[in-house]
Image (spheres, rainbow over the protein chains, first blue to last red):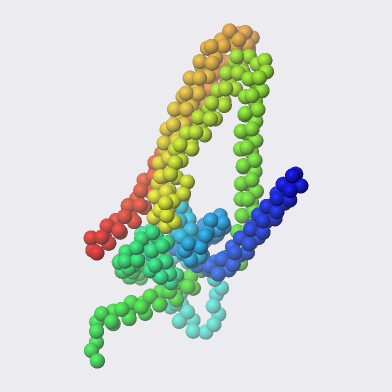
Length: 188
Length: 216
């Protein structure tokens, strides 16, 4: 009886270890595939580089914590964006430091492009900075819509992430795009 | 071929969207040691989680053992009363917490809106928890005072023998009371502020829905 129970305990421990290893592998893959999207999403919520890095890590951590509960009811991408936005919301509430402006974007953590056509590169950088700044300044609900749209999620997926119908997504997206366009005009 | 303004607008929109997506995709990349940092944090959190659980379990078992020991051995009425008091206090605190947290364990759906609603329910529960915590603290003080009064005969010789120590103890309790009160008020103000922010966030989402309903 005790041998059987010891065997059962040992097999359970093995099972737990295996499950954890599988989860770690899945998590590694998710970070590889969606790491850049998570970083971009953190960008929309936080302009200060150091805090943004922390937020990115918090999002990754939240995904790790939620991973055992993911049963595949929605796509992995939907699952990740939902968690990331939830964490972003929590971050917005906690944030105390004032938002910084475009200056912070100067120190964007990407390599300097040394290729020719510097004017073209500069123009692209300016356009990108305008876009990022406009996204950051949108109200939360519109910001979420726009980020999901920019990450190429379908209307159905956006609806799943935000908890609204597809029709609602279409109307809201039109409004959010208009707001983004206007804000970009203002931030020119 | 006619030039349809609607089609032109849609095409312009799509080109605009493509351009935005291209710009957006080059916004940020994770830092090189991102994965290592995350793994490190996960391991630290895992350790903290187990340590926290072990400590909580040890505290609970310790309290139960102490209560049972004091009740079964020839402890004085004062010691028995104190042990029962601590046990009842723990029981009431845990029960109240579980009761207040009803409906706040998980979101009804897995959307962001449901998350914000859950967040609001949790903050409300925390505010109620602070109120009930204040009542429990007052109740605990009354219980201590009554216990001391009921066992005054046993306490009196000790008080007479060490009057300075007892006066110091009473003074520190009297000083601690306003500190605890102020702490609770500060916590409550913070939670009310959080509640206002979450409500605003929820209203923002709902306003967009209302607009959709009126336009649709």
